[in-house]
Amino acid sequence: MILLFDVGNTNVSIGISDGFKIIDTYRLNTIVTKTADEYYIQMRNIIDFDQIKHVAISSVVPRITEKLIEISKHHLNIEPLVIGPGVKTGINIKTDHPREVGADLICAAAGTIAFDHPTIIVDLGTAIKYIYVKNKTIKGVVITPGVAISIKALVGNTALLPDIDITVPKKVLGTNTVTCMQSGVTYGVAAQVDGLIDRIKEETNEDCKVILTGGLSGTIAPLCKHELTRDPDLVLKGLYEIFLKNNG
Image (tube, rainbow, N blue to C red; front, side, top):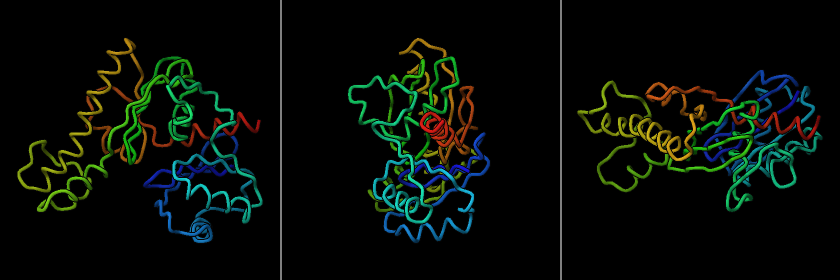
């Protein structure tokens, strides 16, 4: 079995592969103050570590990366594959500073490696990333604040607005403070997704396939007007493809 970690600023997504496909997924909160041992004990309740033969890590949180490497080496006796310089990904990066491109973006692009048409990946995470991929190449990215960040900005910088749950109200136009805010962070994000897809297609002059991924993709996808595919495990699938390139 192959243990896959996709570490974001909000969640640690975990995938288990049998060597052919991802058969189980789990999600933990990203808590940088937790020790490696605390993470190991938490994961041991859901993962049969005796079956794990390989570990691969994609992370944008260095402090969590260190803990996962420690777990892999000290508890599993496995040298993990960590996405970074020197790792074969199968993805070209045509940006001004390729080393600045996050592991999550590279893995998301690797998740589309079998496609033979241009693709826009919309990753609805802590930040929302729009990744334009063509011919196994990342050609450009848009990054905007995610839903949770937007809510924190509203609540933290206003005296009277309350913290809210991220749910979709029945109507776009709200009639109380909570539904007004919920509309803004759900329908508003969906409108942003639709608008940026239009602009990317216009700028690239390509009829792109669109894939939504990330923790909130299930909430936002039904609100979008564009035809799209939802794949919540795209980054884990890409990480698995990269693992295969480096381990046969």
